[in-house]
Amino acid sequence: GQNIDQPTEMTATEGAIVQINCTYQTSGFNGLFWYQQHAGEAPTFLSYNVLDGLEEKGRFSSFLSRSKGYSYLLLKELQMKDSASYLCAAMDSNYQLIWGAGTKLIIKP
Amino acid sequence: GAVVSQHPSWVICKSGTSVKIECRSLDFQATTMFWYRQFPKQSLMLMATSNEGSKATYEQGVEKDKFLINHASLTLSTLTVTSAHPEDSSFYICSARDLGGDSEKLFFGSGTQLSVL
Image (cartoon, rainbow over all chains, first blue to last red; front, side):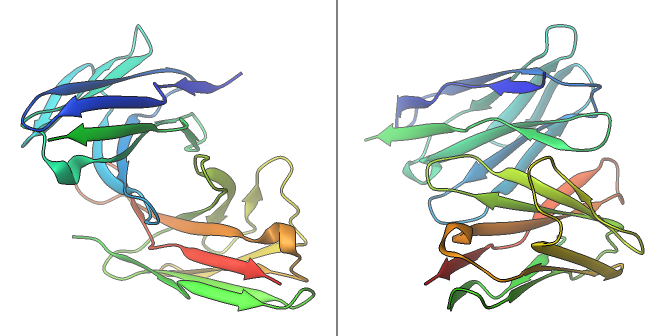
C-alpha cells in the first residue's frame, strides 16, 4: 500500500532549528512536497524535491533520499509565526498526492 | 506568483439542496485540478482529479453522482455537492497544477467550509 509517516507533534524554541522527518511508500514517485498549514487555512506550498539532495530556500530547507524513501524539512531561526502544521506529500506515478497526517509544530518563546 | 481562487469560502445550506464550489487558476492554465476534503484534525483527502475536457477521476469511496466535477476550461473547475446531507459538512479545498517553470507545483485555493443543516 501507499503511506506517509511523519511525527504527530514537535516542540521547539524560538530562534532554534528543527527538523521534521517524513518517510514514504508510493506506487511510483514523482516528487515530494512540503506544505505549511495554519489552523483554518489551506496549505501553502513550501518545497518540492524530485532529485536526491538538499534544496535550500531561505530559512527553510528540504532534503530527499529516494533510495531510502525519506525526506526532511529543516527550519532555521524559528519564529513564532512558524507555529503551524507541516504536511509531507508524495506524488505517485499517477500524479496523485499521498498526504501525511501532518506534524504540528509548536514554537515556545 | 500563481494564484488559485476558490469560492465561496463559507456556505451554509439546508439538507437536500445542492452547493457549487468554484476553483479558478488566475494566472496560469491548469489542465489538471484536484479536489480535497478535510475533516477536523485529519489531513487532506483527495476526492478526485479533474482533467480539462474529460471526465474526472474519482478516488475509491467517493460517490461521483454526489460530487459532480466539471472542468470545462483550462482555468475553471467546479465541484457540486448534490443533495447535501449533514455528513457532507467539511472543509473542501481545490488545487491546480502548474506545469510551467522549472518544476511542477501545486497551488491551493483558500478552501470552502460547508455546513449542512
